[in-house]
Image (cartoon, rainbow, N blue to C red; front, side):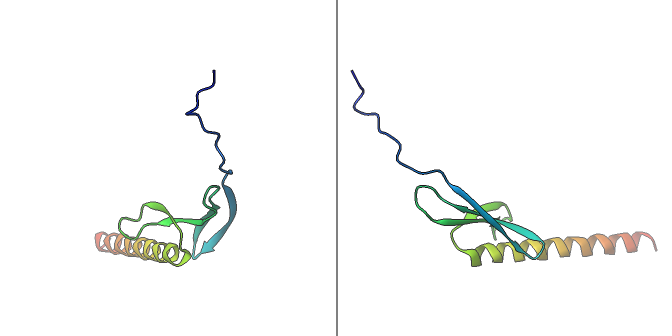
Length: 86
């Protein structure tokens, strides 16, 4: 006897699309199998952790903030090195 609660999965597999280069960062692109939405993987604005976004502009803003943060870290490292060599 078949279990009437079992459902057949009707979703499609997700499709990995070509990545987008923004600055020196690779934004990964995915087409979701069930919804058909295009998703972009980039850093979140709040904590710079990787996250999937439905909007490319939001993903670009996260990448921009990450690149700014990395630049500031490099500058502070260079300043501390130059101060220690004096």
